Amino acid sequence: MITTDVLSDRVELRAFGSITLEDCKTFEEASDYRVLFNRPIDLLLDLRGMNGLSLDVAVREWRYIRAHRGDFRHVALITDAPLLAWGAWLSQLFTDAEIGVFSGERAARRWLEARACSQ
Image (spheres, rainbow, N blue to C red):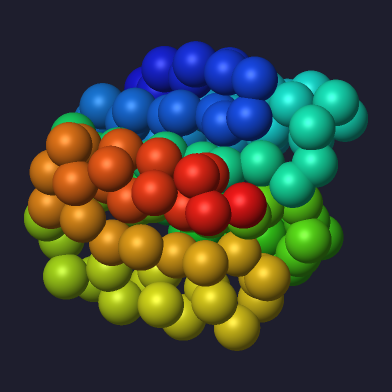
């Protein structure tokens, strides 16, 4: 399950439990909507509560990242899972976004705010 918040220049996602294909669609719709009006946007992804995702979800998200290469400016990933952090660094090959990995929300928000001020 996920929750999403759509702000003027950012989409925030929080994951709880396993992420489903329906969750992916919800996130993609929220991101696509925001990108229509304010491209590129920032993402704040809090995956600390996530306990897994299926292969079909992972493949869908990789395709989404590749299809939206220039739509994201900064991605702040909050996780305590080394595998997710590694995946974030690998994702940089497929996106123009700057990706930061954080263990806490405060540091992630400060990072996004600092980059927004420098734009």
